[in-house]
Image (cartoon, helix red, strand yellow):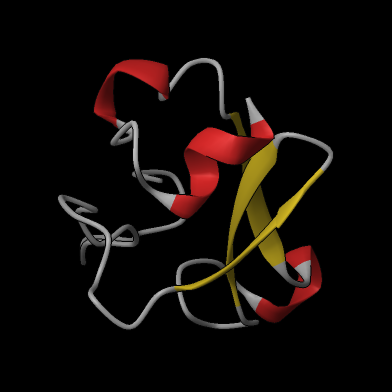
Length: 70
Protein backbone atom coordinates (compact mmCIF):
# COMPACT_ATOMS: atom_id res chain seq x y z
CA UNK A 1 0.00 0.00 0.00
CA UNK A 2 2.89 2.35 0.67
CA UNK A 3 4.36 1.66 -2.77
CA UNK A 4 1.10 2.74 -4.37
CA UNK A 5 0.79 5.78 -2.10
CA UNK A 6 -2.46 4.56 -0.58
CA UNK A 7 -2.65 6.38 2.72
CA UNK A 8 -6.37 6.31 3.42
CA UNK A 9 -8.08 3.46 5.22
CA UNK A 10 -9.12 0.90 2.64
CA UNK A 11 -10.97 -1.32 5.08
CA UNK A 12 -13.77 -0.25 7.37
CA UNK A 13 -13.91 -2.00 10.73
CA UNK A 14 -16.64 -4.60 11.10
CA UNK A 15 -17.79 -4.79 14.72
CA UNK A 16 -21.36 -6.05 14.75
CA UNK A 17 -24.05 -7.49 12.54
CA UNK A 18 -26.77 -4.87 11.89
CA UNK A 19 -30.34 -5.49 13.04
CA UNK A 20 -31.62 -5.52 9.46
CA UNK A 21 -29.17 -8.17 8.21
CA UNK A 22 -30.49 -10.56 5.58
CA UNK A 23 -30.45 -14.26 6.37
CA UNK A 24 -32.02 -17.62 5.66
CA UNK A 25 -31.95 -21.09 7.20
CA UNK A 26 -31.22 -24.17 5.07
CA UNK A 27 -29.86 -27.62 5.82
CA UNK A 28 -29.43 -26.90 9.55
CA UNK A 29 -27.35 -23.85 8.70
CA UNK A 30 -27.98 -20.17 9.35
CA UNK A 31 -26.70 -18.17 6.36
CA UNK A 32 -26.08 -14.47 6.87
CA UNK A 33 -25.50 -12.57 3.65
CA UNK A 34 -24.62 -9.08 2.52
CA UNK A 35 -25.33 -7.49 -0.85
CA UNK A 36 -22.63 -6.26 -3.17
CA UNK A 37 -20.85 -3.16 -1.81
CA UNK A 38 -22.23 -3.70 1.73
CA UNK A 39 -18.92 -4.96 3.11
CA UNK A 40 -16.77 -5.82 0.07
CA UNK A 41 -16.22 -4.49 -3.47
CA UNK A 42 -18.51 -5.49 -6.33
CA UNK A 43 -16.03 -8.02 -7.70
CA UNK A 44 -16.62 -10.28 -4.67
CA UNK A 45 -20.37 -10.46 -5.34
CA UNK A 46 -22.81 -11.35 -2.61
CA UNK A 47 -20.90 -12.21 0.55
CA UNK A 48 -22.31 -14.92 2.76
CA UNK A 49 -21.38 -16.60 6.01
CA UNK A 50 -22.84 -20.04 6.76
CA UNK A 51 -23.06 -20.90 10.47
CA UNK A 52 -24.05 -24.36 11.63
CA UNK A 53 -27.08 -24.35 13.91
CA UNK A 54 -25.20 -26.82 16.09
CA UNK A 55 -22.61 -24.11 16.76
CA UNK A 56 -25.44 -21.86 17.98
CA UNK A 57 -27.24 -24.58 19.92
CA UNK A 58 -26.57 -23.04 23.34
CA UNK A 59 -28.05 -19.69 22.23
CA UNK A 60 -31.20 -21.16 20.64
CA UNK A 61 -34.20 -21.22 23.02
CA UNK A 62 -35.69 -24.68 23.56
CA UNK A 63 -39.16 -23.41 22.65
CA UNK A 64 -38.02 -21.39 19.61
CA UNK A 65 -38.59 -22.31 15.97
CA UNK A 66 -34.92 -23.09 15.32
CA UNK A 67 -34.85 -25.69 18.09
CA UNK A 68 -37.14 -27.88 15.97
CA UNK A 69 -34.42 -28.11 13.32
CA UNK A 70 -31.84 -29.57 15.68
